[in-house]
Image 1: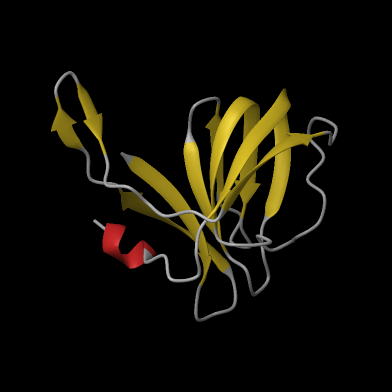
Image 2 (image 1 turned 120 degrees about the horizontal axis):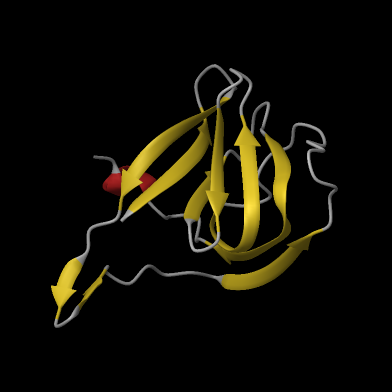
Length: 126
């Protein structure tokens, strides 16, 4: 399963990278290894369509599952990525310049899954 991570590089800017979560076949389904988490939170984004807000950092290392809507993240280079319902991404830019978040298609609802500080994203690089 591919998951896009955005993180702070040595240049203090946010960058995108693709991670691959290995899936094992288990009968008729595929599943990953268990990943320890600290807590979960539901978020309903009330920002108007097209309004990007200001650059900000992820408040914590977290997996985000899109529950509804379409959401876009833009980094300082101008590169943007979009996610819709059922897709997962990993905000990991807790320092640095940060990223912009834009509602493309409401209602945007998320499930934030806080990862522990020792989560090793590098273990999932392709």
